[in-house]
Image (cartoon, rainbow, N blue to C red; front, side, top):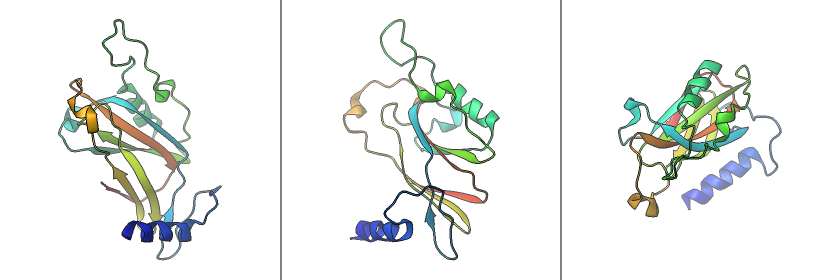
Length: 168
């Protein structure tokens, strides 16, 4: 019942047609932000991220973007030798206008198979609220995992200032 109420409230706030421009928050309300692009793949973990807790990144500059992309393995993780090149689209470094856009990335260190999901990104007067879920591991629990490799999902959204709160 709570899920239906939330869905109905979301439809009431955003309407049934796709937004052409990001919605702005009105006094006392939250508006869903437009996701411009979404990417997912594998990522070399920072030693600080190798705890079982998931982590998040806010990328607001070209330098931070380049540092993030540098962590994506250049080759697929496979038993095939030599391993084929990775097909991760971020390795091609699609251009992102950091004057108008930013990237939010969710990192999952407990698996190299299942990426986190961005459920919603809403804006209000205080800043952004980002809801992320981590799907169950299912049968991948028993698969071999390479040490130091996790998964990521990154979304490109309109640039916003203020507090960004991640809810997992």
